[in-house]
Length: 277
Image 1: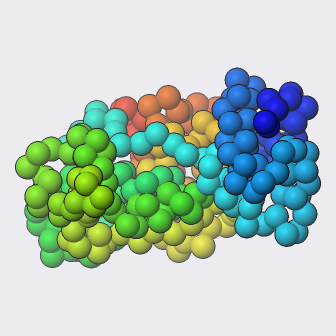
Image 2: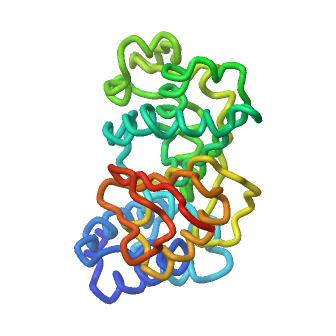
């Protein structure tokens, strides 16, 4: 029987995870972290949080640390999450980017913190539906996350019936193939949706990013809430480097740049536009 995670043990793991990922777990997350640590201890046949912590700190614990990070960074996400923001993207942001890039006929979009792929796939579906002239354009999506398990899930593009619920009914046959496996019904992303998306693992705290840019749009939604003010400013510095003046940044509904960076103008629903270099 694995005991409950003590406050002292929680602080050890909280500090370790913050140093490795930048994520600062709130004190209220002690039981949640304890459950996820207990699952790792059971999988490894261990019964001591302290022994597990020492293994993670040792050089031989590198792969296990990545596994733990994958367990801790699980995020709730869905297709077309934050509908009002998608409306602004479809009505204002994408048309503006298309107008600006009409000569080059190229668009670059980065989903930073893409989780299981719902966000980049949603954005591409929206663009294919609302801007049909883009079929002749060079449109590429970069989708990154620190969780390698989520990235594998996203790359596979195989979603359950429950996950498909927010997808408009008329989109489903166009962008997904039905699949039955072990008596369950799934939908798999079609190549027309998958071919323009590049999935890569990236830690937002490891700067500079191995990305040349420029990016026309960066989505970093419900990620910044885990970072300190200094870390947010560091990340914003990289976003500013990659965005041209007039480029767009989308944050989560509960996130803000107030006191972080004043070189962005708020458009609405946590959509910002870069106003200066």
